[in-house]
Amino acid sequence: MNYKRFLFAILILLIIVSGIYFIGRETPNNSVSNPEPNNSEVTKSEGSEFLMDTLVRVRIHDENSEQVLEEVLNKLSYLENIFSKTIEDSDINKINSNAGVKPVEVNEETYKLLEEANRFSEITGGVFDPTIGPLVSLWGIGTEDEKIPTEAKIKETLQKINYKKIKFQEDNKIFLSEEGMSLDLGAIAKGYAADYIINYLNEKDVDSAFINMGGNVSVHRDKVDGSLWNIGIQDPVRSRGNIIAAVEGEDISVVTSGNYERYFIEDGVRYHHIINPETGYPARKGIISATVISNNSSYADALSTSFYILGVEKSFQIAKGMEDVNIVLITKDDKAYVSEELKGQITFTVDDLEIIYR
Ligand code: AMP
Ligand code: MG
Image (tube, rainbow, N blue to C red; front, top):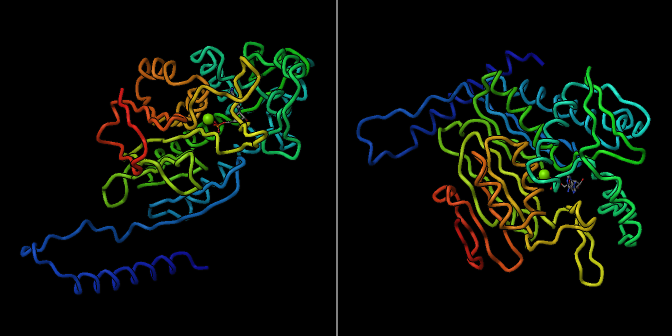
């Protein structure tokens, strides 16, 4: 297709449509003509793809929106190819299959992601642990093999989990120092990827963008009309698409970890995918959904998973000690514990929740 001609046609169409719009519009309160900002050169492209185990949806507003969108999807698929646990020649797979054998040279991005992950393990006292792989496989939640393992097997597997055994070596080499260890970056990779994309959008000076990676939302700047984005937080007890609250903002990331994402129920007990590395069992500290709002999506992703495990008190302790980390924790007794910094920025859309700012 002749790209320039296509753009020209769109431009003409926009001029005609906006002409009709302005003629047809009544302006009773506006006797002086007050022209709207001229956005006629701004275009929009939307795309979605199944990446990183989730449906990723991207919306770009920019004069080069089509190219930007294509580049964004390419970059996401590049990251998936190195971070995935299931893609055969990914960095993570190479590290895992060489556990206890030898160090593996990885992409710079993988090295950086692992350094970042380790930082969150330190911050959360080991509750966030990227070496959780063996426990994730043992439970198999969300796979055909999901089951409640025996106590003995859980105890044995716990021996394999310890982020301190990830060895960072020169020349981007990573070594898992014990056989049977394995990395799983499911709790942070999407956040890292979102930051990577936002970085690119900033570099390219892209007008505006919305990225939704299944519960991880990041927005670049504000909306093209100058208003703020509204980002919904999924209601943990109702079906997908029903929100519990909406958060307003620009240049923010809103990430939720919930027990409704992947789980099975046996004898009335819900076994979900967020595992407490202290017990070896799915976390059970009264929280059913933990949301973190931050400018940085890696923070939001890693911490929302961690706060789910840590419970209300410890989560607030950590969040209060960090800059630009605000939280919304929903507990199973229908309470929402909310950072007071969010007052005015968050609107709850259900009335059966007790809202506690702190
Ligand atoms: P998220 O949806 O971001 O909360 O991440 C959940 C995913 O992270 C799970 O599906 C596991 O792959 C992984 N995971 C589970 N428990 C932990 C943990 N304690 N630390 C780090 N990653 C975990
Ligand atoms: Mg997470």
